[in-house]
Length: 218
Picture 1 (cartoon, rainbow, N blue to C red):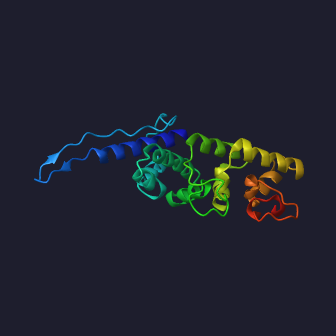
Picture 2 (spheres, one colour; picture 1 turned 135 degrees about the vertical axis):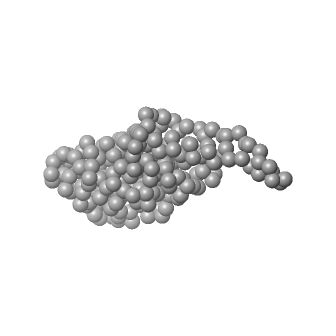
Picture 3 (tube, helix red, strand yellow; picture 1 turned 45 degrees about the vertical axis):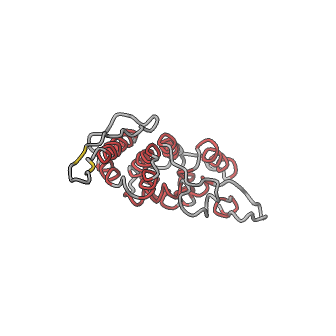
């Protein structure tokens, strides 16, 4: 996963640099070369690159769409490259480019706030955090091929911090629902109602109006 993310980062940097280096035409018709501007590398993302990957090619080709286009337009080069790298990680789970974009948009609060309610608004994902959350889902027993199905149903799970949300909710399930991680019953339950991993309240009959993150519905 990390190698794919790094390859996408490298591809985006080359594309942006090449675009910046194109000669600008003078009014008289002659072209004057403009020095290439080097993009600032995102922190901790310069890892060994992968020589061949359809995921890399697809994510690099989409470097000028969606949130990334907006970030680049605002001269937020590092943030744009981080978005590209995180999208590559999500695509490795089996999503196509539009699907991966949709997951990140919802997971990091770039769309409607029905789920996050301004707790998370237009955040740029960190590739190490995204990778850690995917690894955590695998560690509690979710098969990699089913993580795509989970994130298709509730993309916001990818935006939940491991220590302060995911782990606490897994512990809640184990204590109150008598299921243990890495068991068939636990995995089937989480796949059926993946929103349990993002829960943050329990109204216990006194509705707080945040049903999509409440244990009362699970």
